[in-house]
Length: 116
Image 1 (cartoon, rainbow, N blue to C red):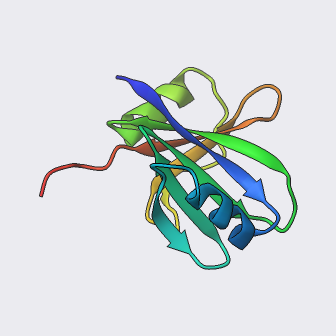
Image 2: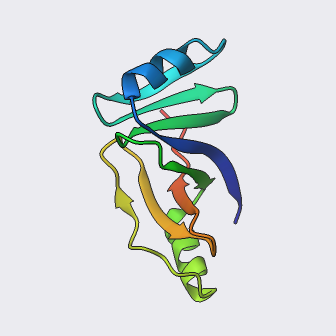
């Protein structure tokens, strides 16, 4: 099983101002936009999420895997404390979250199928 760093999500105070800024980066493409909540830009091979929190509170890292349920089971077996079962997020990703020893949030998500 492989896990790949997919991107980071910044907790931003002004979603519109942040969207305007990141939209100016050459090659950036906004893939997800939920007004007042979140914007996700693809920049090259990675993504940057802009989560509207009203204040700057930091960031979290996002990792992709080909089988979220198997990874969930493996991490539980390894003794890593997980915040809850995998669930579908409002912006269309199925994820679960863990915290590292310093409190950094790691969000694991399943790689979307590229089949049509």
